[in-house]
Length: 318
Image (cartoon, rainbow, N blue to C red; front, side, top):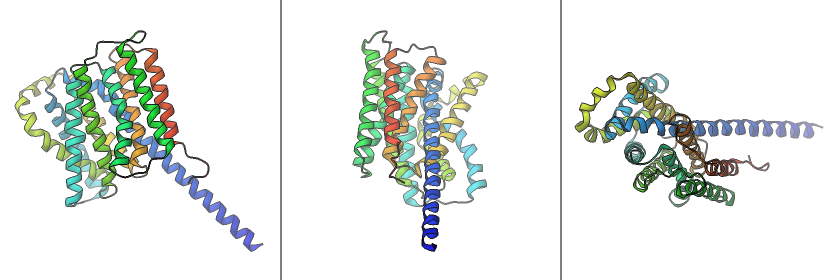
């Protein structure tokens, strides 16, 4: 009788642990999805800013505003934390790839192509991150995850058909602009992999602050020649867009992304970058008035299926 009771207690505690683990994993998924959706929504905001201000100046001001918010938060929540040399080197690389290269590619590309097409190019992120996690981080991807990458690529192909002449295709995009946006994709993919490599070496807010501080240092020499354009921020609408861009893309997104990455492998986290092009396309259609087609809807449906496939947890897995 005692053995049976003990076995029941063990089973109950095991189930409780599994439920807690599942809740924590679901929360991590929610963090990652929200972070990428906010980055995607900022594609349309970035396009509006890039039409009025020099690209390096936008990125540098965004980082400086983020530092002003993250510094007191880091001190209040996490105290004084000094990153080691290895962590600083990793954060510096994240600044170069995830801030400088990503912003330069996306902002420059959006001057030449539509926000909708830029969002479609960004849909290649999951495949790039998954391949990078397998080749560089040596993470073993299951066949199910490779199938998810294939579905995401299929969604990208369908949306590309919408541009290249499918029924009601949008046209209007520019090959060079899309290529520049893809350069930003490579930078963002490198950032995702580097953030995963950093792991728990630093608390979330502290890591976010140092990432933005180093990004500002990298961007400052390129931003100074266009400093006179700051006068344009006297227009309340433009200043509001910059503040929104900074607080969401450089503060909230970073905090959510770092928090989510602590519980999810880089290859799976990469699948959540599909929320980026989805949000970018929604912003382009709803806020900027750009045209969408059935190809876009079908493509996003395939990418949603790939996300479910990548994150589905079988019954036998904890």
